[in-house]
Image 1: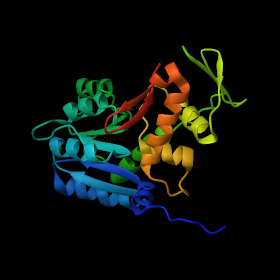
Image 2: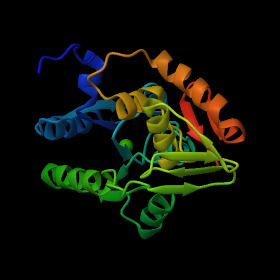
Image 3: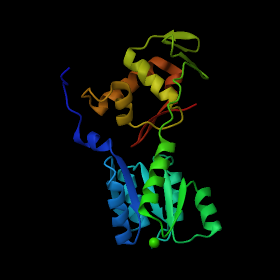
Length: 242
Ligand code: CA
């Protein structure tokens, strides 16, 4: 069937796995980039300082960060701590790279939430294999779809397509229902407008992200007290809180 619209170019680019390499030795950063970009689905950005890494990540969240510990200025431990503290990057896999092989460093890195730890010198093939392994582990688990949600105000039976607030049935359109399902399945996590568009509307439809705001507004109004649980997270998106 012919498509009625083309995906936007930036969304196409998004389908590749984006790796950020934070390494102050430019030669090593370039070697790592070449090694990883040999894998066709990966695209690699390199930066040489912790500050630059934090700036770049604020603009575009990568799928994985390779992080040298020994950096000028903000060091790798601090970068790791900040990435874990920010809601947008708290789940991004981090592999630490370091010349420091001591156990205290390894433990500190893992305690800060690093997913893996590679001691220099390392082979590029091993590095690529570790990157693949961490990405595999972090693949979104195919969580079984939620069939019933029972909250303080809201009861949503997703199998029966029945929604109640304070015991009263609420009629939702299909989009509103899917939007609610998506928010509830990801409760307490922020979903960007783009992500909601992707999940609820799919890639094929050309819809402005503003439509998400309109549908959220209607959904909130219909859900009354449960509608207040849908929070706007300024600059990021929406979150269903409980
Ligand atoms: Ca270094």
